[in-house]
Length: 163
Image 1 (cartoon, one colour):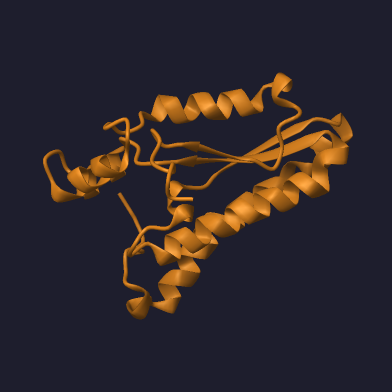
Image 2: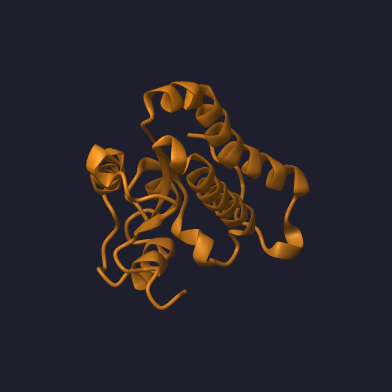
């Protein structure tokens, strides 16, 4: 499992890593949108759903990742404004700590990392990947056609009080 070392203090950020994290999180969303945009416009229907993160609200030692996800959140809003008249919506979902293989590799059960994350989630549990997928499926529905430019935090309440 590959991950960029994006957990650094601000005074220790390596700009090569910063650029790689930005590139990995922003460029594919723009490239994919560009690849499907003509078909969406001709159909006068489309759903763009990007995955950002709870870290856009601020989290120590995650500056590179937070900056990349905040850039993606802003890009999504720009897409929403530019594409709304074409019948295309653009939204992002912002998961909090989610029980994935990568999360567990970095925060094993019983670790200080796990405890730190659980303290920040009022529901006192981690999201399941299926819960994140359900939010994406909701935004992809035709009946979600009047929702655009929004960030949906799926975080068990972790973003509350940190706005």
